[in-house]
Length: 162
Ligand code: SME
Image 1 (spheres, rainbow, N blue to C red):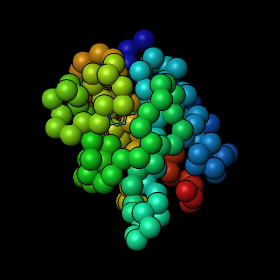
Image 2 (cartoon, rainbow, N blue to C red):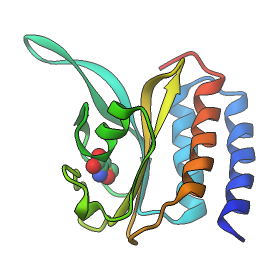
Image 3 (tube, rainbow, N blue to C red):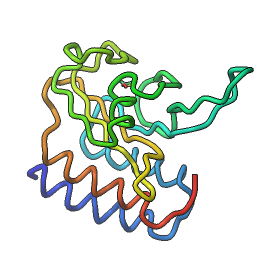
């Protein structure tokens, strides 16, 4: 099946799965599973924007690892750092055809060669990012961007939480 057709089915599936569930973590977990199973990505998951007081003198806002499928990953990513922090800072999807050429890329796994990061927004503000890694180079294009953006919209559309 062509990628676009596959994504259309997945958008419908995600919309149905999240329709009756208001818990954001539960919905993120199912979205990660659905995408990971469908496409066989190397790593598929979420980082959530969280305020953390682990520094004694100040509260810092950073990305914290959320529900995912795939191998162990780094747990915290600062604003503007790596592909994830860049997508957060720019509030836009970032496609990286070759992660080794992305200045500041955070290598959670040496097996990853290309990546896409899609912001999850609530009222226009980034509350999380969807991060997908591939073992192949140049895996992601505008079709992935279009449908993954639709998928994360389903996620934040009906819920008021985090
Ligand atoms: N490569 C990401 C870090 C997260 S892992 O890929 C799961 C980045 O540069 O932000």
